[in-house]
Image 1 (cartoon, rainbow, N blue to C red):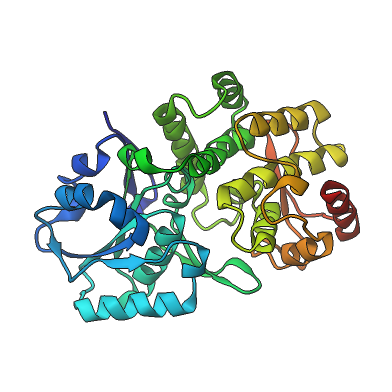
Image 2 (tube, rainbow, N blue to C red):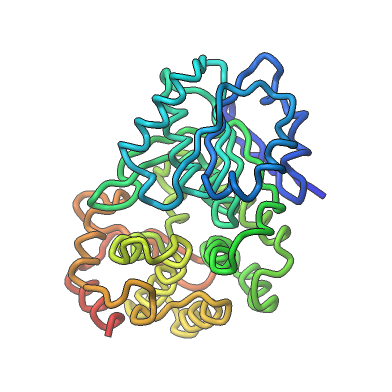
Length: 359
């Protein structure tokens, strides 16, 4: 059974269709109008694993040339790969009324979304996430970006999709490590603003009742995005764990999955909140304990890519795109389900905290 969640953004509103068989269920949607042509941008690994499903589900739509395969991994989010994709789209003869189908995880979604935003000043993109992490987070909300040597997602635009199709059938081939990494984004929604959801997740001892938890996480994000589309205020809360996490991810040089980095980053955010006297120590321990029990490592010394440098992490955090007025901006917590934006970070204290955590 599939379910539909509405993202209310006025003239840019769209639906998220979630569930087993969502790709087939979405075919009657108006975005698949007969006169429109589609360019498929697909993760190369997904294309290999799910070619039969994708071909069957998209039978009858007008395709603009061969599918454009996107290499796996964060290295694909580069100017060089973006130029290659745009060149292929031009070769396909896409017009402004046509659209891009982005089939893959967060990397494919980010790159395809940015290419669609730039192509002839903007064409539609339909996001078809194939990982739990991209279903729970990156496919919804319109963020697109590529990376720079200084850090992740530093060059990009907001470009809302015209439809998101989260078909849980794609998860059947997702490795366990990737599933755990995606679960971090579901936990994140609870830690930001739903203490009861976190209690429920603790009781389930892992990613059970997946569709229900995923729908709750998407609906939570939908509400925040509708209130603050361009991250001028409350949407920044969705970055819980990301400032720490992006620094870890960059330092690990590809050895750490994004969701793993976010999980460790959320534990750091709660530990730092407790250190500052903002959050009960018991809540920080609950968060770290639950992450560890679900297979998400929070000890920096045990993460892939360790050992890390506190000084290097701090420098990367100084370049984070969420910063304002030259100050490091963190999402911290007053407790589980009560995150807030903290603009008064003392770099010296933060450095000492990182050193303590790395030991």
